[in-house]
Image 1 (cartoon, one colour):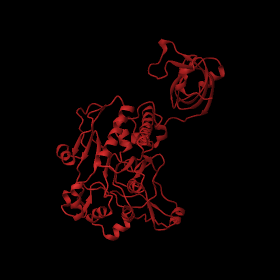
Image 2: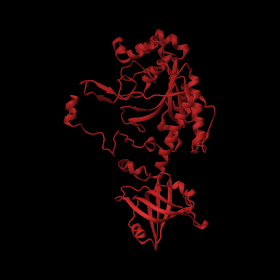
Image 3: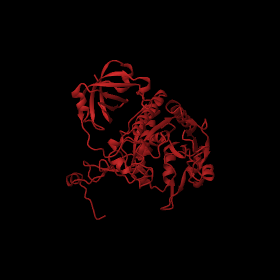
Image 4: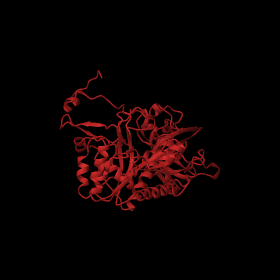
Amino acid sequence: MRTLIREIITKEGETVVLEGWVRNRRDHGKLIFIDIKDRSGMAQVVFLPKPEEVHEAATELRSEWVVRLTGKVNKRPENMVNADQEFGAYEIVAEGLEILNKAEDLPIPIDTDGREISEEARMKYRAFDLRRERMEKNMKMRAKVVHFFRSFLSDLDFIEVETPILGKATPEGSRDYLVPSRIYPGKCYALPQSPQQYKQLLMVAGLERYFQIARCFRDEDTRGDRQPEFTQLDMEMSFVKREDVMKVVEDMLIKLVQTHYPEKRIQQIPFPHITYKESMEKYGNDRPDIREDKNDPNLLAFCWVLDFPFFEKDEEDGGWTFTHNPFSAPQPEFMESLMNKENIADILTTQYDIVLNGYEIGGGSIRNHRPEALRKVLEIMGFSDEKIQSDYGHMLDAFKLGAPPHGGIAPGVDRIVMILQGEPNIREVIAFPKTGDGRDLMMEAPTEFTEKQLSELQIKIDKKK
């Protein structure tokens, strides 16, 4: 039976079977040493001159070969302990060796943190790049963060629900990724920019508290630290006010840091509240970095940004558009202005953004749960009755059937993990990211369709354009 490397500390004097990767080999005369790595850690193995066949096989070993080792666990003398390794107080004296797979010459080194290697090379060999210690830690901590979110919200009676990936294209601020339908030629599904409408419909369904770890897709032009697909912690709650949603999120983030990042210090609890107007005047943006010491990597400065304008002028056509999403409710004192479609520039929304060290890590709002209020928002944006019915008829119809007051938020998993791990961009905490221009260098995607695929979808490609 296989023994994980972390288990050797309880098996001194026993014979164990280890399986993993050779990280390096060192020849010291008649003795050969290797470090073997599995998911739980790394340990040193020593090959003595005998058994001769085992020693001879060890002379062939190279970095990243996959092996199965049989050996006896010994505790190393005090002066031989490797303090740089978690299990450096032990070593395995090899008794048997089986080579499970060899590795060709390595395309990139993985014994460094990888920052000196071009990003294109790392992304091309991503499955290999993920073996480096830094990337392994990032993936493990990301998993712990997601598990924490699930446990925290489940304990608060939230229900995890998966919503569709294939949905309807509706205006939500970015371009949709479209998926042509073979069964219904000329028609397309859209990948969700967020589960916004579905989660509101779950409130109509009476679930009251919903969440999911949601994949989101946005066909945007190259914009720095953005990805065509990303992950958010999507949440929605019924019978709540703005402060109720904010409290759940604030408590969750505080406990996350205390549980998994105790070395980090939160600058201020409760998180300070800053109005959009104050933020723009003092910091010049709506995601202020309020850290007292920006050179302190373990300082976390959370804050809430509130009182956003509901509408802004569209630069293209000069009409009104929403600043966050069309489903937000105005602050109660501005509901009359919304319903009368007057003083539009002065209407403030119930939107709340959570910001950490200068990054927006989540945004949400209390929603318009009355159909007539949502319709007024769409009318202000210049939508015709036909367009409103075509794009949002399902929402308006649902809101006529006893929709409760509700609100939610969607913290970004990628950004939260990036900041907590001290990484410079979200690509370092995503297993298989795209480049800044949306390419997958490892899979060589996107790729062209075959003529058969295009024919089945009844699509023609005009390559001249």
